[in-house]
Length: 150
Image (cartoon, rainbow, N blue to C red; front, top):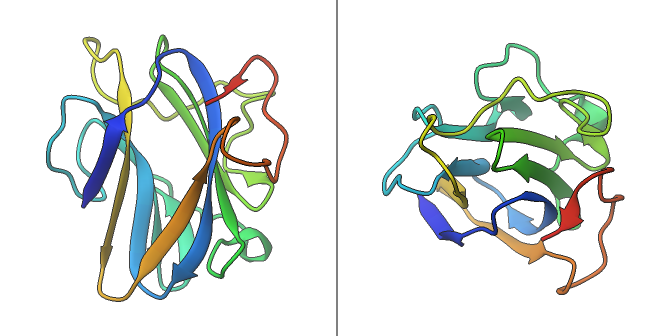
């Protein structure tokens, strides 16, 4: 598994756009203090690919098949709020929980968590992507109300 540097604290939105994916992959956010993690590690929230469907960890329902991110140009939407530890994720314009209308049921870290980092993992194959921030490219979806571009 790999981790990014610490992400900015506050309420932010960014996207991860696929350039190649032929592996069993998970993508999510982790407590900044974690140095090793898997798909279901405490203090993390991920979307994971299982049997060609994407599931939020801890959820029994998958993202609808018409919105799965499996091919070049597909994208993940990630919104987070470090003050409440909430994470929202979606794919290709469909949110698992919409940050414009819903408090997230997915929290990262513990009561002492103040920052997150991006986490990517997989088994076999290739997963490559571009991270799109406000300064690095044009978003595929709108930044949710109350959030800023990372």
